[in-house]
Length: 516
Image (cartoon, rainbow, N blue to C red; front, side, top):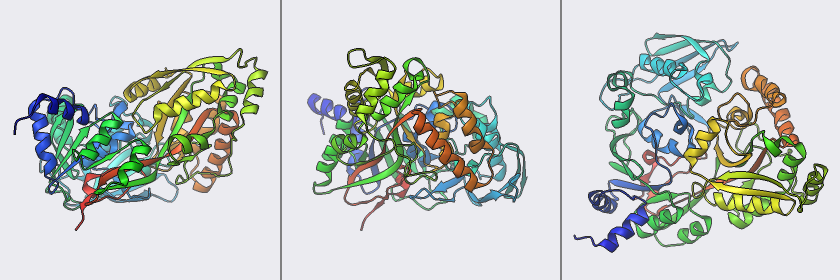
């Protein structure tokens, strides 16, 4: 069938695949029609790297659905954030938490057909513990020492107690790579042809255009419903809407909520909106005006979070006063930071600021990475302006945020959506606010001294959570960060698909079925 220039341009705009070849576009049209054996997903972010264990991209929550499609994790996670067997079928501490033991699943194969062994698991644990590797949570993996293998059983000594070690085995960077293949092809070769042991194998990858996956016939977790999966990388939200509405994709996510409400009412489409483990926040960097407690507290009290949820997100969100969502282990509904613009004005006046003499700084934001991300920042800046704050918005890509945050070079304020699928406060408030963390831009001795014991020292979980409760109150009282809301994930899919939402915000192709 011939394709005309106008059709070509319309298709390229809707799919967001600028730069893709004509053959790729034609192939995409053919794949679209084969819903019986091909699932097509219009996705909002593309992987810049195929190593899910190192580099800034490894901690991007948006990439985990793709990584989990190709690679296995030590421990799997259920839709409600609880944990279950993955490559490990058993795991745990000894009584005084000085040793760990793990049992490796039998019968798992890498995509090249070789058996996955306990020695392979040890190789992976040692690799990410090596500071030369560049794992961004190396402190977690380096907590184990003297790993020993006895058949399928692994034991290790605890060099530094990390209370959420096993949660990380189902979380960011907790993936397994094939040692023999990786050492044979090297890092560069692995990027060109990545393999894992997960439900799908990489068939073809066009950076920033599409990813085509093929079903792994040897997958230990059961045969996925679809022979092929296509991730179309569509960064523009309106283009993702066009993809699902036109039939170009079978499922999409991260669409504007007004479009979500419209689309879910259409025949043949279903909309699912689930509170997920993603918290929208504004980082404060301890520089310039943010060193002033009055300024920080004014910025927090000036923001009407409920209005943002109701007006911008059409009610799809949960206002928050800490970085802990209701599903998290340390969530405390009694910690409140009220909306009080008059108090904000008073606090600013105490530091010599007013609407006539406003405090000025820049705030960084993404646009289109998450629903209404830029609009949320616009609303916040508008609320700040009413009390005596002039903030200039700088838009950047999410990859730039990770780069600047790792270098501690964010502006005095920066919008971000923090994903904590582990549910543990170490991985939300902890890594976001603990100064030595590569993910934090707040570095003060008072807070670091409060967080270090609960993050790395306390072995009694009840006492640890009590310590977190105290720390969360202290952070709120000192306005060290501006929590905004818990996101609700909008997913729209064809009615014939069986889709299970995950609180961890996963869209997992191997968990999607065809009804009937």
